[in-house]
Length: 184
Image 1 (tube, rainbow, N blue to C red):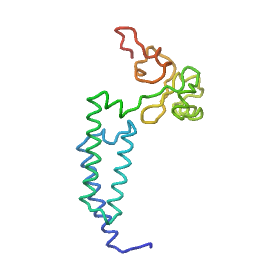
Image 2 (cartoon, helix red, strand yellow):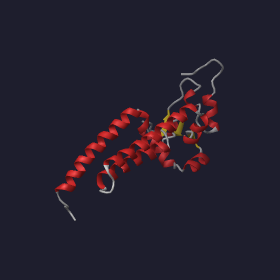
Image 3 (spheres, rainbow, N blue to C red):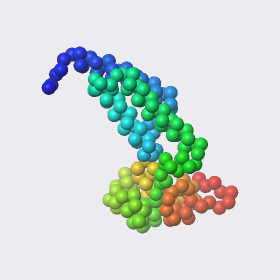
Image 4 (cartoon, rainbow, N blue to C red):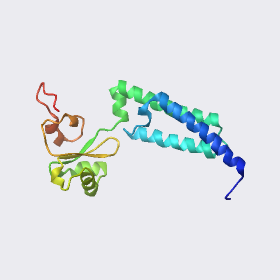
């Protein structure tokens, strides 16, 4: 089956255009945070939106109004969850993982790496991608909540207050500021 007729193609073009416009409008109304990649829930919503849009486009059993309702439901649930997580520490802790320290001052933190399922090679690649030629040039490698690896370069002024919420006891010395010092 390579071609089912022009009507099927016209249906996809018309429904696709309308569904796309509806999705863009819904995303504009709910703001940038809806499609961010800050945590696993954000990824789930992004994948679900793509899957729903594809279903609207390709399934004759799903009407445009049903598809737009499904898109609005997903976006609405994401909006509610992010609204709640901004206002409730308990919801925020439930939704978001903490970043994890995986490498610190020349040492691979093997327990953290094993827990997060990250290899030395992946850490080395992250260090290279951040422009360092030697592991020793990286002071810390952190697995962020969105799954990306961030590298902190040579020490400047300490304390580094950006490490305030990073899991790992090795980060404590870097993140603790003397009273009254807000850090860089």
